[in-house]
Length: 261
Image 1: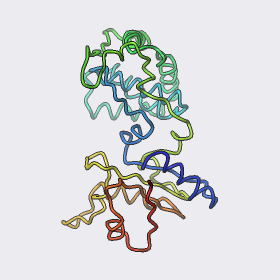
Image 2 (image 1 turned 180 degrees about the vertical axis):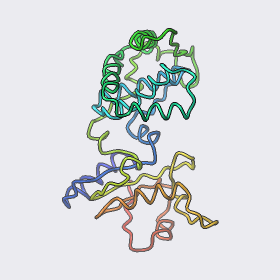
Image 3 (image 1 turned 90 degrees about the vertical axis):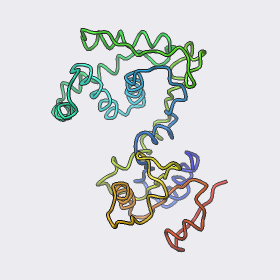
């Protein structure tokens, strides 16, 4: 399923029944970003910092201020406290989370990031210089732009960053979220996307199978959190390779199966 099918879920199965509190959920931000068109096919830089800064800027431009602050907070803490241990980083992040002056500083920092309308080549120079000056760092930032690779075509250098790291419709960014973000909430309806691949960061059809050892693993807890949110409608989206027979075997004959062409 894709965004077209999730739009149908909202229009046909929810709006007509007066379901106003609804969410489309996925396991984590990796899948969310892929569905939002933020899963860039081009990988121009060696340094993950470049991609994190772009993510913060996109969230800010999409008016997801909380998410922009969360991403940028991690960036700034790391840059201003090099060598910080994982444990100390967690403590400092927790302390600063409710520091409103610090959060205001983060917003100002993200707001000033070079626009993504700049070419990849220009942005690769402008952004490191901006970060160093804005944070008053005593060392240089280097994104390590690649010459060329499987995921970085030479022509990309002269194309806007935004051509490969997309902004999306604000309605989609607010309705598509992660399981973690709906924990504890009560919704009218929910649509859960199950990934095709079996990966630690994904949930898929196989994760619905009973555990042989009888212990409830983390993925099943995550699935339970999502499935227990809606009051009226629980919908699940599976890859095409999952057959109707498999669905009936897993959930019983009382389910409604909708096959999309």
